Image (tube, rainbow, N blue to C red; front, side):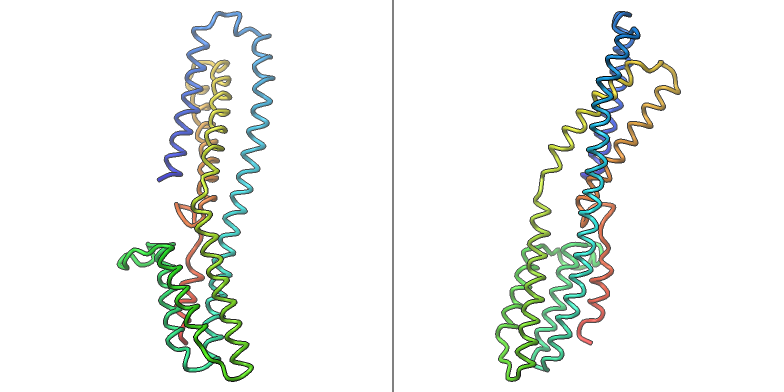
Length: 253
């Protein structure tokens, strides 16, 4: 709901600013709206428009990069889980219980990130996934290799499970980030000022007001994309669980 709420609030504030400008146009003395005043307002607001446009463009690009990184991380995580299962399979039959634990861990991880993949499953969270990963790591450490190949496979398995734990911690840290909120407040304030200036010199008819509404919805859509893409594992636009689901179907073979 957070991205939708943000979008609605941006539309309300920006279009409300435009309506405030239309009202000011009606009540201000005429000399406040002459050509000289218009030039001052347009030149000053032009600087704010350029600055806002640049920042929105940069932040959308950054948010898209965050989304792509999360998508790559999920695919890499899926590949690591499959490689982990294969390494333990080549190790020997004594790893069968560990491989079952890995499968259970992956199920927990899927439900924790994408609850919709299995609505009937009990709710999962990052803490349970972390405990499950630590259990798998303990089981791998308990192995007693007798050959060089088994020692190499054990070391490889430990490296892969450690990578999984690192990815989990990185995801937990990203979820706790609140840096986007001050940014949203500041940019929305700039947009309100811009739309007040637009309304100040917009004729009071349907075309002018409709144009302001469309522009308001457009900048709100940009804010929606920023919020959605910066939270790649939640919301309407999110990373697909397909790679991990594929791996889950392959584990244990």
